[in-house]
Length: 142
Image (tube, rainbow, N blue to C red; front, side, top):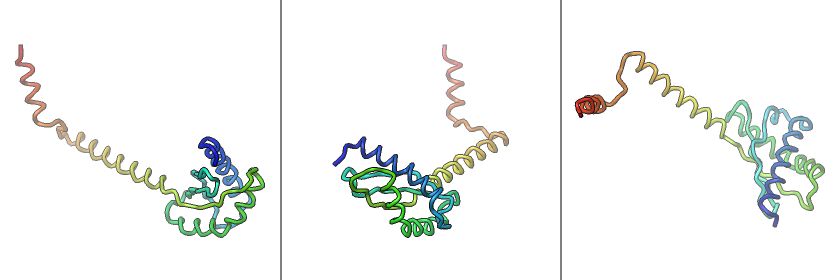
C-alpha cells in the first residue's frame, strides 16, 4: 500500500501521459476530441479510475466509453512503458458530466439575472413591503 501523496502523484502522472497518448498515438475516431479530466488511483494500485469528457458533451459519452474500453489494453501497455511501476493499475473509464452540470448552472444564473433586470427595467420594486414601513418608522424615531 502506498501513501495518499504517492497515489495522487501517480494519478497525476497517469492523467498527463494518458492525455498525451490520446492526443498523439490513438487513431480511433471515437476518441477524437476527448480530454482526461481526472484520475483516481486506489492505495493498493490495483485500479485507476479515469474520468473523461468531450466538447460535444453527453451526446458522445457512450461512443467514447466504448472506444476507451476497446483501447484499454493498448493504453495500459503504453502507460506502463512511460511510468515505471512494478505492476500497473487496471484502467476503469467513467464519463465526467461536470461540464454539463456547470453549463446548466450558468444558464440558470443567467436566466435569473435576465429576469431581475427585466423587473428592474419595468419599474418593479424588488424590496419587500415591510422595509418601506420600517424606514418610515426609523425616520420618526428621535
